[in-house]
Image 1 (cartoon, rainbow, N blue to C red):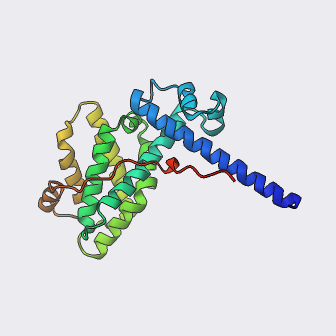
Image 2: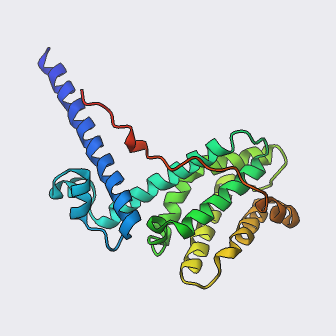
Length: 225
């Protein structure tokens, strides 16, 4: 093997090891934060659970908050994939979008890994836009093309919706509104996308398909070469 090829192989192994370490830390943080909450979780406990040195954590994440945001990014991306899988047999993009809205609203108010970051509204809405947006923006575009919804600019409609979702979830966490109003909030967001109010209320009341269990992309650990 030439020196250049050897260096490339070494770099490949280093990159894979770094990826595995990062994934292990996110997986460990997700588990610890689910059990104890973000505030009670410690970087040392997360490092121990990930089976890496305590100092290694800071090679990948500047702070516990940064690690929590990485966990949130994965939760959101996984949520979009789960909704997409559960709704694969449905033809109406407006109905699928309604299911996505209800699911996101419920998760934002029930999952403490998500809920404890709501005070960082700008970060949470940005992550939601980036991680869930590819799915929801595509739905809005399809719904507009089929005449089911009239969001205008699908990306802007989703951007506005992410901020509304964060604000609504924060209001629930502060006990300013009750969780039973989630369907009402989802219906209003459907109206924002151009659906008639009466149909929006009927749509969010429909039974929803069961989502597959939460999975972690990092559970599929690549083998080191």
